[in-house]
Length: 206
Image: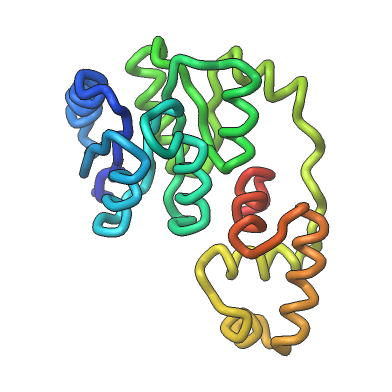
């Protein structure tokens, strides 16, 4: 049997965290490895634990959920993010998805739907609440097009490889890697590697 999907629950309300742990730990293939009450606590947990999916609210004291999502995408690219919140306005949805959240559900979601969404998110499939899906559909722009080589470079960057390591794995020079990255940055509207990786996940390129 495969190991359980490892979860981190991030919410500033203890009763919400307790409720989610109770619901999710009862599933054989899910395991809540830790809880956090803030973005800062969540990032500290991620430095000490391997987590497959972070389930996070958006509005919390200190750094908000969007900042947390952005940090996860940059520092822990193998970890997916599922937003679970009460807010589905454009001002909440758009920044969260732009930061790299894979899925976005509301707190009135049925338990069965949440569990299925966690499994799908772990498989890198997006699950959106109906109201969020409608909003995303009406506002989404077509994803940028990267060449096959550019996608290979971006995938290796997302895996934490340096330019030299990327070049060695793809049998190309380091200067060529830098050229590919410049093209990737331009196409994704990114200013650095972390932003490019976040944009890659956001646009389904990774």
